[in-house]
Structure formats: structure tokens, C-alpha cells
Image (tube, rainbow over all chains, first blue to last red; front, side, top):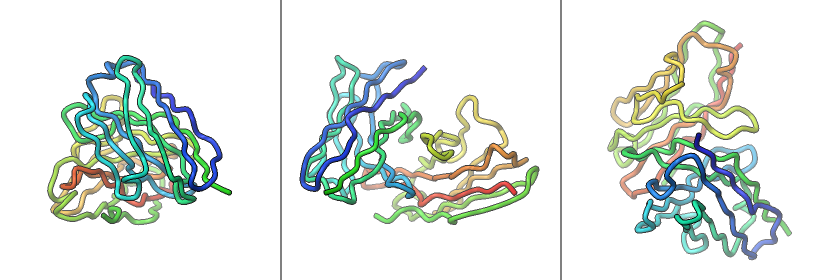
Length: 119
Length: 110
């Protein structure tokens, strides 16, 4: 079955950087686009970024554009999110998610990793 | 882009039906049949309940159904059960090649 396991979250000061990882298994990782979605404490879901299956397209939400970078290593079945110039408003649970082939839909979600940006 | 508009909360008794609306624009909900719905229980990851406006993934109860008219999509849950109590989010692909979520609706089964 599909498994997505995030890691790398923690407490970081404003302005600093953090890199999240997502280990994927149970499906052919190299064949699917992957997304990051976040959820601030007690708030709703916010789409962050998508990366095409072959790395050819990266698209970001305006709120993170220029600060976050999504990438993948298809040989290691791993998705990454490099987060630079972190702000307090970036505090959230970050979910690694899989795209549903043939549809612009997110189907599977990891359990999430909490990023807290605080001085 | 602003989040899609959902009611903050709905409530109904067990066995009854409810409908949750999700309003966007012609740039998202109205422009594509890529509207999906997610269920999220407290402390858990979201779960896909409906894709492509009205398609139910394998394993999702047929008590859940989706539809769309113009810029508004809807999720209907019939025969409400206690375990349906959760937060529900809609999502749509947009003409900016991004994705938008709704603000979420808290469903209370009385």
C-alpha cells in the first residue's frame, strides 16, 4: 500500500532554513507528480508546491515562491522541500502528498511533520 | 488567489443527509472538473473522499457523493453516522496551474 513518511520538522528561528524529506513506498514513485500541502495549527489546508514526475515542472504557491524549493530523487523514492527565509507564518504541519494519475487531484497523504518557526 | 468558500460548520442528526457547498470562480471550480473532497478527523491526515467532482475512490462509502453546478461544487453525505463527524475540505485545480483548498467545514453529527 502507498506509504508517505515525512521527516525533518522541528523548531527553527525566523530567517533560518529547514529541509523536509518524504520517503515514498508502495507505488512507482517515478511515475507520479508529488505535492507538499501544509496546515497551520487549528487552520485549514494550504497547497504549497507540486513537482512533476520527471522534475520538469515545479509550481509554487505565491506565499512561498522564491523561498521554498521542491525537489525529488527518483532513485531514492524521496521528495524534498527546502525551506529558506522561514517566517512565523510558515509554522504548520507539512504533508507530503501524491498526485492521482490522470487527474489533477491529490489522493494519498503522509502523516505530516510539524515545523515551528519561533524565536 | 483566495481560498474556496465553504460554510464553517454544519450539523445534522444521525440518519439524515447534509450537503456542503464549495464556491469558487470560473478560474477554478467552474473551469475544471478537478474538484475533490477530503475528510479529516482530529489529529489525522486528510483522506480523499471524492475526486473529479463526483468519482468515489475504492473503499469510500456510497453514502458520499459529489456534484457541481457552475462555480459551486457540493458534497452530500446521506445516512449520517457518528464516524462521519469530521472536518471536510474541498479542493480545485486552477488556471494558474496551482491548487486551491476551501476553508473547511466542521460537520457535527448530533
